[in-house]
Image (tube, rainbow, N blue to C red):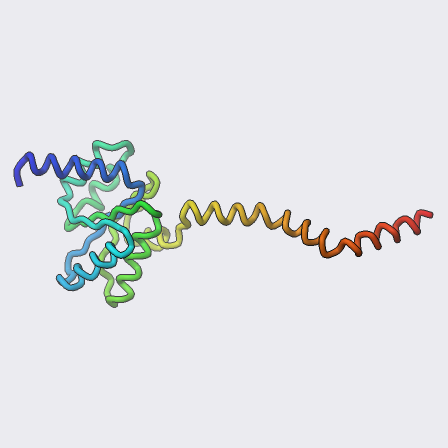
Length: 177
């Protein structure tokens, strides 16, 4: 690979890292060609881009973007590396990896690290955390639901208990009188 080709790849990766707020780095070594093709097909179906890149090129691209990715250098950017880029949510690649593992019955691909909204997750143990992570839209939906529930309860109590409320007021008036 020539120096110019490497520069083009680094530039493309830099743009992807800046555009996509969620990316995972994983190791698919030891997977058969059929397994890799099946994994790529699942990525395509879910709208997740998968790309195999040299660690040095990933490192150089990460150095060009905002944020501190140095914790990746010694642990994540070693051995075979593939990058998953997602626009939708930080949870989507984790879900994809877990689904693929379940279908294949193997523990491949191995999760090495991820960046989700500028937070770094390193090591296989972080995959479960990312899998249970809620997306921004899910969190907004929960908050809206929580905010609406007290108002709904008051409205429904007033609507269903209109006659009861009048009865209670009448009883209170009779007691005072």
